[in-house]
Image (cartoon, rainbow, N blue to C red; front, side):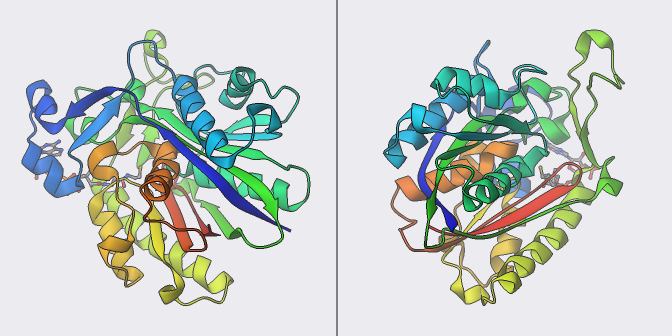
Length: 321
Ligand code: COA
């Protein structure tokens, strides 16, 4: 028994913030941001618009694409680091919106690899026969934890949501997933807000993102390179088997390094970082949805999904659509 992605969906908030808008807010330039990151614009949630609001749109689109009904969903795995509430978790809040009461629903808090972690967990439940119609979501409102006075991070992060529906299948489907974490790097990328260990002013308890960008960059390239090798080796596949790379969208230079590693031209890589910025757990499912909906990714093709984020946490999924 395998699990198979049978529908994808995505949603971006309406408000667009361009690099030129940022030039007016801080000491930066469109040229610097484009050269160093590949980002041209990003979407920012409206006042009062929450992570679950974005996720609901993405989830309904994935459910429609899968040809199932919201009440058919029997498992919800939700990747996010910007939850609406401490509890109930975003999976439960989304379940309430969709009306699929009773099924397990939880959130996974592994920063940018949140969707890959959620996908890996859902895949195992479907394969075990414990879920027949699983909804996997990655959604964020990172603008809420962005330090808008720090140009080194404020130009990077953004908001959005992506989702997929998984169903059981006798044919793969998801061939394999691999998850990793290394907490020895916890100080290179983190959000300094919290509940139990509140290191900032209690009035600003949610904190803001802090990152040692150039260190993260180097480790991300090496680590993701190993993750690509691991995914292919586990399936006895050569890199030439991969039709599409669907990477985490943090920086075009990291994406280009992964494409070179796979000998894939950039035309075989789904790139949304220019339009979306870094949306953390939402980035991979939104990129996947973009490729599926515009017809580039076709049924039967082999996709390599990968992500890397704060922790560090990272992971991959090799998927036949
Ligand atoms: N506008 C203009 N200049 C900026 C800037 C901005 N928004 N942000 C930083 N700079 C400046 C720095 O102050 C520094 O100036 P200096 O040389 O005078 O000291 C210079 O640009 C270079 O900074 P550096 O941080 O070394 O740049 P970089 O080439 O590493 O690019 C990142 C910065 C953040 C784009 C890049 O490191 C990156 O993408 N890192 C990984 C992000 C990531 O993958 N996150 C993990 C997954 S979520």
